[in-house]
Length: 580
Image (cartoon, rainbow, N blue to C red; front, side, top):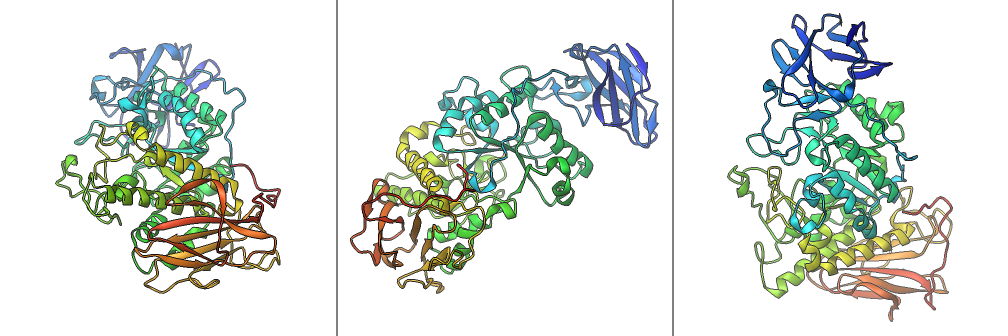
């Protein structure tokens, strides 16, 4: 090997012809050395002084170095340091094993393997067409009940793609996939905190090559019509420039479709303006939809006006997505089963996790055999999915919610790398009926463009058809029940603007029966019921006997569509409506 001049940028390692360039930021006046190891060795085989510098960047290049045969670290100020820009890491393949960097047990891999993308590129699905699904790479398939060969890995996700596609999902949102440190005071199961942001987590790979396996997962998702979005919760110690570089790297090298960022830390203005990321989905968490809908679901007063707003708010404008449950908080099953959090297993005396969950246990705390309570919980979960999947913003389902996955009342499973924090697939067999309901409800959403319009509806007659695009009703037509004590709402969507059928959705979250006045349709059309909390998704539409009024029992949602009396659907979707 021969040392040559090298270049200060880009930081990290890059190939320059037949040479490998090394560049690293080093505090002034500190010594820096490049340590080279034979692959898988724990002692350096060569050491190079890094004296060339520009500003606080040290750099050199080595000719004749075969990347596949060597690994590397830096020694800065006498301390062994793994390159912050490392693209792959050796020594951390085993999840949960403590590794000592100072004993050379962790090393950077000089990764230069080619990858055949077979023509793949980011899908760029329209934001309004997304049905998202939030998962943890390890937890999604780690449980023995997952029945996949490569449990808890990128490959395990690939094995579950037929399931996700059948459910109707076209985007997965993944918790951190980069190489974070899980061995902390409490097991860092979620992956928040310091990390090597450019390197896929090697313990998430079934093979020895985490880079290739993550790319395989992305390519397989794209072939199934499913986008891949990565949560990137950078810490404050990461420079703004490095954050931008990291996002560009994953978009270019891994064909990632989008990112979920913390706007309090990430340089959002610069990221939005970045020309490389212009067509990449840049997203943020928000809990406003979740809070409003949970409160409405359990029957809080004074929620109707907020519900009206969130039912029609389009997510793409803000880079947000709607969820009833997410990783931080109760699962949907626990939301209807617990009034209080139960985080005792976390070892923090139940002081951690959100205090306000806006949950309701339906009459008993935790598991019960009382049929009335179990029936009410199932009813509430169906209602929750109605609220989520019929809102016009982008919906996101928490992994396992579609079959009642539970975390035993723990609303902060950040350290629960065990069956409590994993997705329990055995519940799919127990709750097949709920799964099938969710699948069919997703189908209803996709079949009716009024539930996923490209532009936000504004409550006016845009097409001069005699009715506004969206309107609100109660016991009297054209009058929203907005009194503080109201717990019910009827929403009428006109299909004239976006195409497809007119739809009326009646929400009765009260504990007593309510009637809803139905707006009059054109002479040839009648109102047909296609779904309700009680009956699920009907096999065939049912003509309503009373075309002016419909009564709903307590805690019930109903979907009604307007179509010609013989029952055939009329009206074609506008040309810019795309398949979800």
